[in-house]
Length: 175
Image (cartoon, rainbow, N blue to C red):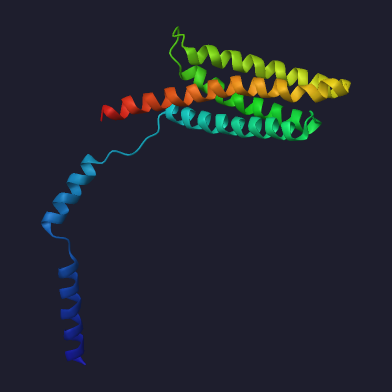
């Protein structure tokens, strides 16, 4: 019995000694821990991600609304609802982007974006009025107006993407 206890003790001591970290390992580990920098997200980065998601959702809503309206060949109540939902996403994306933008800097994207947003508001209000009045001729002609407004908004969306990619390209070149 003593022999088994001695063998077990030697085995346990050997395992502990072999599993004990070497001084080189401990040195490397302490160096890594002192150099460790946690990944932090800036508030602006978080706002940027949320804005991109909101604009993408607005794109989905507007695209679905416009194309389904063109297929149906007339404005329907559910189209108006999806247009207003797209507008809600648009505002959720535009406000943080506006807060991040450089003040006093006027660009083509900002001009087209303001025109696109004004057209979307006008479009949605007129669409709501058209559904309420239920005039057949207006409901039939509305898809053409929707396509025009969508095209202008899409230009603003695409120029925003291009500007964002160029900024990302310049910031990654600094690294």
